[in-house]
Image (cartoon, rainbow, N blue to C red; front, side, top):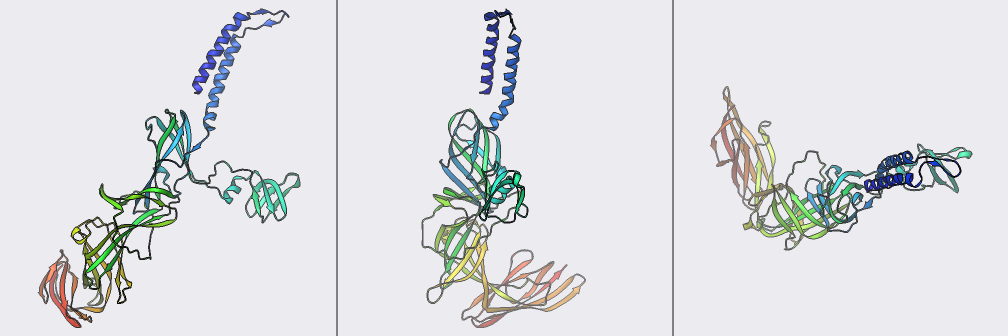
Length: 505
């Protein structure tokens, strides 16, 4: 627009320069004054106008009025990762003129990563170009206002007096230059009145773009960015039956939004998986103390494989308020078969002690299969286990974390330690039979004070080149250095495992 204006002015002045000598040739006017040729004067004027106009262009751009993006549009989509990370995609409608547009967008998360911001015109992606983008987060506060008004006139109310003066300092109180009344200091005051909000201060974090647009009119635009401060994890509630053979399992999604923005009527998607990030992230911890247990309900999330992760899409809109923890049902399954196991890890202190008294761990094992009423990818999270007492009231009996678990894989939960089962491991014999070979005999004594028969799995870690030459119970070799023994123990009785190994190092 400015170049067209300059061209029109130049053509007009050249025309005037040509016509002036014809209409008023050089010579003496009636009063005897010399009529001077205006050709050179007009040329100078043209140059002056062009030069001054060019000098004014940067000022015109700088003074272009910024417009704020309306909150109306197609809506917002939030994808939350279980690594304290969210991807926000906001669709809005905006009116753009031809040429330079300065656009502000205030409804952004306070914990936004400014380097991840992307602005795109869906209407004309190739003809609406971002020349510059800024993230302005110098937010207004009492301290900031005082800092910005150093050297400026303010009004201070202290008690029943009012002081008008130039603010010289705010360190340890206020120092005002009152002009002819001199300089005063105020150690305390009631209120400060500022003439206006200083340039550069914002009431909210703001994204600002300089856009060059070739398609005037309404544009459908999308703003996307990454933000920290928003996290999700899965929480599971398992209620086992009286025989400890089946469980009802409810999965819950817990979203914690501390990103510094609310996302009303949002499309919510959750990514389960461990994505790689270059910058370290501070993972937000969440712990929900309430028992969230529900009856059978229709699934609210659609699950799909996505790259090497899994994506869960909520099949309705939801509000994600700032500083809010929201829980949404992920799935419910009833009558999932479980197996209770008793584990004694006898080899945990193999090298350090000839005698060991350890607790017997209680584990629950289940298989994430369709046959068992599951068969879905289960995101990592905390599983809390409950059981009804004799009066029918649920009591909390333990919890454990699970990792991302694909379908058809086993889940093992460490619930706690058995009260009525004890174990003691002793090295009964240890002899060196050559320079690099040893012979060792180990005995594990188990006592069951329950009124039912049990089986205890005894885990042993064997090192170097080993061979078990004698044993009271069969064992299963799990890998090169780990074996497991299944030891039956009668109700209110005892049992002993004894084995001899030879190993060479």
